[in-house]
Amino acid sequence: MGDTERLIDLFCRKSKAVKSRASKGRKRELSTSAQEARGRTVAAQLGFTVRHVWTEVGSASRFSKRKSRDEQDKALQALVSGETGALWVYKLDRWDRRGAGAILEIIEPRDGIPRRILFDNGDPDNPGIGLDSTNPRDRGELIRRAEAAREETDKLSDRVLDTKAHQRATGQWVQGRPPYGLKVVIIEDPEDPDEELRLLAPDDTLAGGKDAGATKASIARRIIMDVGDGWSTRGLVAQLDDEAIPGPRGENHGWVHATIRTMVHNPVYAGWQVVNLPGTTKRVKFRGDGGQPVRIYSGLVTDEEQQRAIAALSSTQHDEKTTRLIGSQRGGKAKHLLTQFMECATDASPMSYNGVGYKCWRWEKCSRPAFVSTKPIETYIFHRWLTRLSQSDPEDDLLHAVAARWTALKRPDETRELLEAKAVLNAAQESMKRLEKDRRAGLYDGPAESLYAPAMRDTMALVDRASTLVASQSQIEAPSADFLFDEELCTSAWAVADVSTRRDLLRLAIDRIVVEKAPYHAARFKGDDRVHIQWVDGITD
Image 1 (cartoon, rainbow, N blue to C red):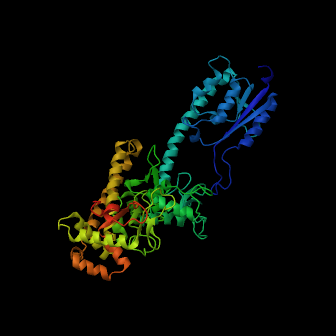
Image 2: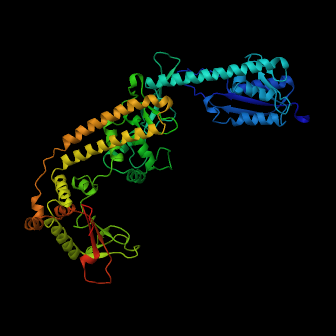
Image 3: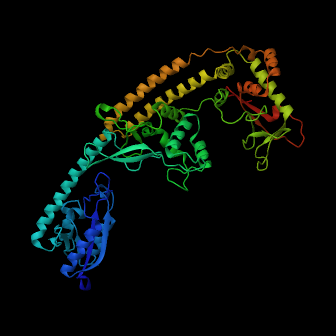
């Protein structure tokens, strides 16, 4: 090896451990800097010059077979390639926990050239060499200790699993970074002062943004409540970004709709301990003794509030016009009869009122923007609406749909409760389908099998409760809508109605109005040629 024979590298490693209040500042493991000092002392005793110091900090699990140990690999490569004459390691179990095979690779390599690796003697007062791979008497001991280290690692893995299961069952947070809106609080274990408890609590850190007093916990709660109130995830993302509220990743990172969906489905926000299904990021309730879920804090929302939000995400969209009729639409009331009804046939942009008529909202950019004067289009739409209602057959689907919307208009509270009950039922039924799908996909195989039966029982119970709720809410006394199907009575009602009431009446039967561009400037309005109405029964004419 020539000039490298008297060179030595040092490999220093310790587990990544955070000093806690419970430990009272005591260090349970020699720091990497202290290890380096010992290594340099030994190198000086042997007349070696330290060429390089390799340092690793991490847990034993972090450096499993699935994850590389870059510094160790680099140190070994330097030894094998002859860049250094020897390698010093503080402890054998700090070097590798793969057993005898890892040591044999060094002392009996395939190329037949033994490498020299030195292990510290462990004497706190007199640093020195404990084991030397070039010493025949040490080889057997090296192999024996390597196997002992591997066996201890296997036992440690089992103990860690048992410990984490116990911690989860006693309401401690054993995962890493807590979800947005929550924080980890570390306290001393009252039963064992040398141990600490990691508990979860609402994060009272200021969230940032335009609302100076909003905390991350309040924002997390607001997100789930807003979804339950009907906000779409994309709409909510736009709103949060507009308020300059940083996303979970911090400043200069906005929100994404997938994050909001994940938050809504995470049981931890309702105060429950969670566990990931193996091989997925899907979080489900952790089940303790007897299959019961474990509460870890009071929750930012109640189970009912979270289920309401999940239902809003999972259920099929309710009739949009019915939703508007029961008053859940956001924003002020339109002042003109056909705004929010009409759209341009060219690019489907809404048509807004401009003082003399309705025009395509993207007038400057649309290739064929539509415009129609106020009186002709409003008169035409009224007569089409009146004719369709008064001339429909009693068994026509349109009349049944109009009657349902009339009930929603006159019984808004009862209708809203019915829609919410149906949404909860639909969400529960979807959850049951997802559970079965996940089981068929193998997500509940192995250790996760015990989670399936309790989850299915909970879901079936929710379906039963939701079905009962739908049945009870379905008993809405329908107000009479007979006048709507009598041309004379309907015309009289229209004549005395204000704009808001007229819009409600149109909405009973009409979903959308599409307007074509006039064939030429100042062309006479011909409604049958330019206007297409989408009725509530799905027919467009």
